[in-house]
Image (cartoon, rainbow, N blue to C red; front, side, top):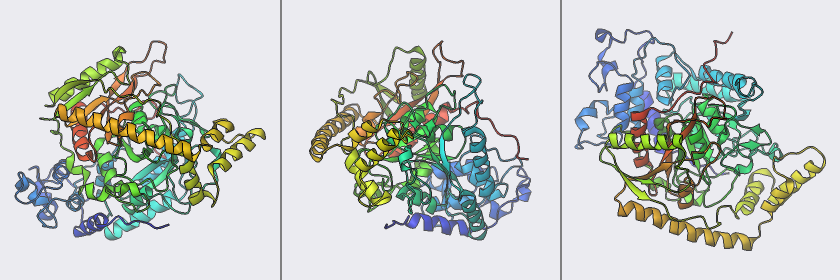
Length: 604
């Protein structure tokens, strides 16, 4: 199939990486100003005579700033290519000048910037990092007895690991040594939901019926990440055919929550959520049709972004609904999500819905990462739709989140209830049609969803089931007629228009920058309905951890159940959402490391 190029971003980053090839030795005296030659100090922005994480944070927040803009003089020393504007190329160049301290690299809760800093200093390689994550997957993902409350349970977040991951990491290390990193994602291990094509590995959607669905090409999103130097190390479990938002049950087992293996992980991207939360990878890819990124992100204590529908290509993804499907990042912090979206977003001729994407994509979403972004912002608090305000633990989290927003300088406006229900238009009647197209393109020419359903039924009768769903249920999905699909689509588009109008009305009447609400219902194992606003309007939304809610008395005595606060705004408002979410995250720091998955002892 045809493949799109990443364009000038990769070229610019590669060029910037070649500008400065020398880095400070790993054991340099980082407090000694006399040690630092002027070349190492070039681009230093914070006045401490060394280039470190603080300088990079300042520069990332200034991406897009030009000569003459307010604050230009403060970042001008880091304009490496001297073109009069701060770009991601300048960020890449500055990252080459990190002064690394003597502390050993810590895998737990690490992020993209910390990894690049360690690799630049020579204290970490992509091979070493990839091996550590693969070792954690082997030790934790299918190992029983991790949880005293569930001694026979396993995390079950991964369906398969990538057998070429270590070879890819070795090649990327060699490339880094020869020409520098391609981008800030160079050598970063990624985990992708197993409904996204990865060449050479089966894409199953959680169904044994597709165990032989080995494609020869990557999905467009995977190709974009690989072009930036990222490595897909594993495929994550999911609710089979992406059907559920509360659990992640498939023919490959039931994913569990790393904060307590008796707790639900959310779905359908529950395997992605659980694996990234348990520190089995750096960045996760999920898909979202109703709430399938934001629900598991919320319940696993992660950041999850559902981008504007059409900002990220769905080419090479096993579909559920042509009007609502999207890919999005799931990460442990907001900055990693922004950096991932830089790679993912863009126009793809194979997905016509992405036609406007390039026009709406900024130089970098990282330019929005401002810890003061909430100051002066107006956010509308939505109540009474999709979550239970009577639960004291959850209500306490929401009350605290509102107070944190206000302390950060935002005005929180009560905007009441949303006021529009789904009116029965919650499923999908395009599923059969979309599956037919996918199967014909990637599985077998002329093969249909009805053929796949019959395969499931035949295996069921033979006593060798391939699906967690009854075969007749799958046949019913596959039997949707063209007339039913057309009727459903017409009804959906009417509903979508009314839901968009309602969001636009609330935003305009209250002069809002964003609308906020809990991502999930507050009930353990219940997704609620708030998350469908983004999915049905196609507007972007991001969820950020807002803490751990106490569990009911009858539940095991875990630390608590994670819940997320969701920010929603109008189409292509990802930059604004990243800024608001980052400011909330930096003020609260609610993300916690799951206690059941600590650092492993050194390998023998």
